[in-house]
Length: 141
Image (cartoon, rainbow, N blue to C red; front, side, top):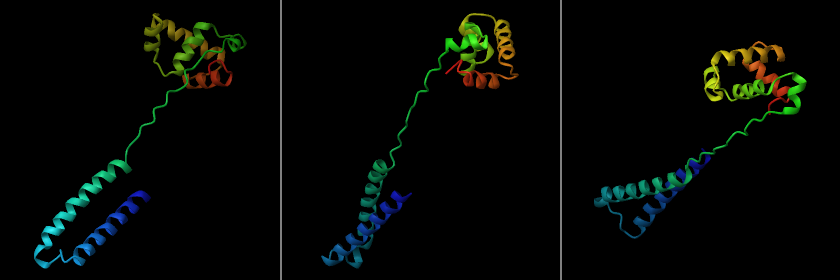
């Protein structure tokens, strides 16, 4: 916002200076008012377009999240198998049961059974709680 105010202030100042220069050199007379106004308007339109392109360039910062990993040392402490940890990791990525089943080439019912085992072992009732507890126990990172 500060850049916009400064930019418009500079444009108005430049416009006033141009009108003053035109009147000093007697180029500005009553008969040619419309021509000068049109010329200055076009000039400032071009300047405004150029300034807006340089001042308001939108940059996108693309960040890639750190890929999650399974911590095998903590798996045994929680009593979770490697397959259950793998499913837990895919749950952490936000995949549905069907997507996990497709990715691991097993049935959706098998995924549901593994998830219920994960819930029992981590003593939770929801997927979000399971992910949170797995992160707290450093099963996934």
